[in-house]
Image 1: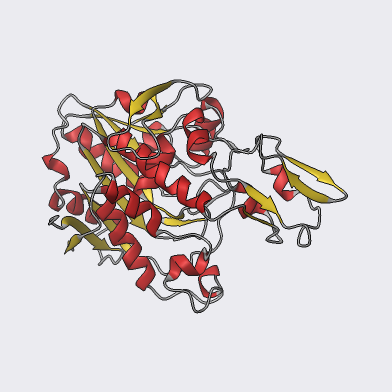
Image 2 (image 1 turned 45 degrees about the vertical axis):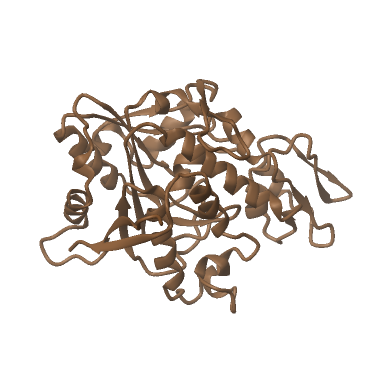
Length: 369
């Protein structure tokens, strides 16, 4: 029988003279972070810098706290992320860096340098085996991330329109994929248009980086030959006129994301930190952020990426939704995540991750004050 993994937690409450960043330092120490050998090792801090316009992404202060501790432990930290498929400010390394700087992630504010993991145009990648892979035998990962000796994921926990939630597995798996890797993860999920609901506003086309959306008689049409299934059109449509073509699409993306995370983490030390605050319903890839659906909860961390995500999910699902937010609109659904994304199943990613040996959903919580 699998032993429960240890997950460490601290709340967002702070007494006078004791900041949240000081609590994060104590949390890392209690949680075994310093048991990793960082001496003269390159440590990739996998993070999401946030799409400009979005205000739910993590403040750089969290990254600085983690980077500073790695430096004190004689390691060489750097912040990293890979480029995106969709239209936005992070499609190539130069605009990605501009976006990071705009959101406060300069090297001085963040406490370390920033390296875009898959190079200038998203093509600097390594083909990495997927141990225990069921859908994939290999994964295309950004080279800088694979060159690191240690992987630390620093994650803003939130909802996600395709996978149900975005946590550590999503950040490491999807976020570490090169452009070709992201296409491989997305290409089984193809959205379709509901003609009766479509009003021809063009919002979906504006967000499609693949030029897959055209209009016939003021009704959108999606070319599945060009579509990579990134899901941006689903979230951007103001009339809910775009839906997934089949239920297995999001599940496949979740499975492949877990397999990519398995490839990234195999054979080297890793540690995972989920900051569960400003829990927005959609990914930080959006250039906007809807109101947080629940009150801030706290920070979860540990060595087991699956356990850290599961503990975060359980806390979110038990929370009371904030009035007037998307979390109150799916009445009768089981838990917050199902309420905000009723057509996705957050369990898919965790069940598959556990199945391929990425970690365990069993955990024991240790609270650090």
